[in-house]
Image 1 (spheres, rainbow, N blue to C red):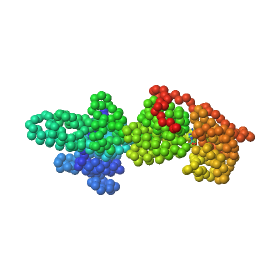
Image 2 (image 1 turned 90 degrees about the vertical axis):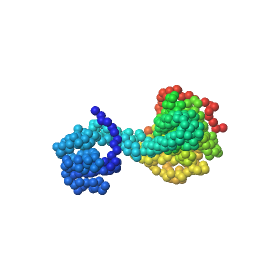
Image 3 (image 1 turned 180 degrees about the vertical axis):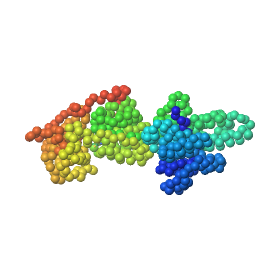
Image 4 (image 1 turned 180 degrees about the horizontal axis):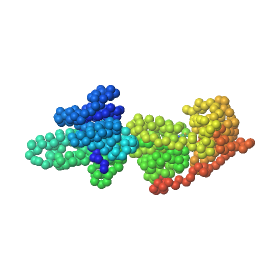
Length: 551
Ligand code: SAH
């Protein structure tokens, strides 16, 4: 039968801890922490005392009624036995005597002799929770406690303090008001209603302006306040509770009309007090198959989606009808302005209380200016959530059946850009025979890049591949070697976006035949399967009217 869980106030209570094991000391320190006065009893020189009283002799039954507080006739307040089982006879005697004297007793590893057991606890400030398995397994209890603690907001201690604080403020205000009311009743000689004058007086305090309804009795007002606080605690996003101020609540209460909502249906976090939010989400290389579920959820729940032309259309097709989509007008010469405009749109959305999703092609932090955007929104008070995406740098080689690393062939991968700042060539990496190198943003000046690699001492016989529109239905692969790359690429014409992969890993699965200078493969067969996950409504094309398409 499970026991009654309680939380005891043990401040200044005398706890007798019988034993000399390491557990004895752990118990004593914990009790000391909680404000009790632990006394360890047992012959040993190992128990460092400090603030803990230690009586260096074996326990005697009379100690139970002699070491306690004088207010309770020297009976100790509780007993912890940490003796080893070899003393079982002594332990049983202590247990029976404690029961007879009504002293709560806990015996380590022996639930039968306990009148109370300890819980596996998690403490953060004044917040605590404990797990009991009714003696079935303390390891299990510990594991459960850890897992439960992991799902709590990290600032649960602060949350607890804040709620306590708000409650205290409310009660303080009530006491002030009660005094005012009593004064008013004395003056006006009526018992139930508060006159206009009092309402004005109440309105002058920030808190009371929240719930003013004319002609309500003080008791009604008081009930409203308490209900209002309960509503906030119930529906406000937990993690935000720690930073909420009376002022925020004042504003939000007025806006959201909590009371009304309560009478209809419980509101979700977002509808009660809606604060803008932004997520930076990687949308993968192209195929909607390679979206994360985090990305899909964000797309389906966003109020405003910010994208740019690289975000795959297969992904944009998933945006529900009615969700506003803004696509950055990034055309040559306008990149900076387009980026600023996009950020402004996002910020404005956040300020309006919208859930803004910034979709970024591939992974947001691989050549995507993701961190710049993060810092921008953070600076303006909206720190983004960030979700990774599958980067084209790793997906494209895979799509072309090129293992980025392979034992004895490639022991490293380098992802770099083929375009430096202001369009010039970037720092060219040195030649490493066992490296797979992926060049993004490199195809528009492929001739210059190959020349620079040669100057840097690269072996131009190394196999390479240009992979364009990786994972999209119109994916194309050009397999060749560095020395024939320019000719091959020119003969095929470009199909952006695309990248270049170099290294002997290109030959592990696929190989050119003798004398074959290049080979072109069309389509993404075998890689992309039809997107079949049921997500309620089938994906619908977003409305053209809602999109801002680059001119
Ligand atoms: N954040 C992106 C990269 C942005 S830089 C990512 O992680 O994938 C843009 C470059 O990525 C393009 O110039 C091109 O080199 C490469 N790229 C993006 N999508 C691609 C795709 N589907 N196939 C091949 N290359 C791609």
